[in-house]
Image (cartoon, rainbow, N blue to C red; front, side, top):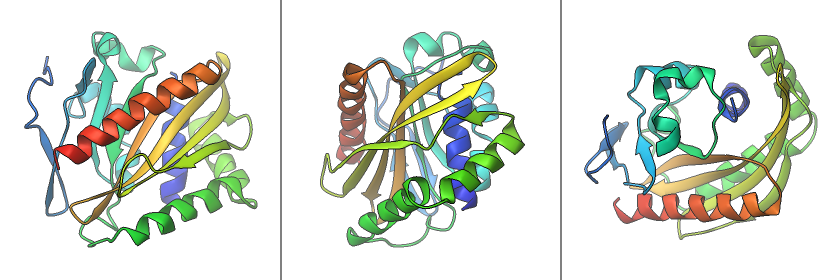
Length: 220
């Protein structure tokens, strides 16, 4: 439950609010396993930048952030990241409880079902939303909508969801793709976020998300 709370808080707080990644050799440890980070055209991996670490510090309570990718236009403004509204970014992250657990493909369906149960069924979301509002001073405008579930690659399960939230600047909508990925017998997550601007933004999100997932698997 705590992990889901932090996950949703991350969506709300960063969802719309050089080290140039030129080599394919960047990597991060997930437990004892080395995860190579892909090069993505038009984006820069910058998880170690102090301003990014401020944004991701709450997530680190439940799991490591292995990669954080901003598009290059946003990266140019990284020195004022907390002051600007940005989208088209993704994060690769894990779970401390699973970082040294040898997983198999069948378990992807289990973790996907657990997230779906927590976010979209029963009263779980209302409880989580209330805790986020109290802790972070934001107001979620309603339960997220599950738009689609699919598998873009073997060993991957993907959920596309739409969430609305309110802050001092009004109401915004974010569409996100949450991926559960089996890499080197470890389950990782890749979450891609974009501002929702109609059906075309969903298609664009899926295109960019699928490419990022494909490249992550290709080099690992």
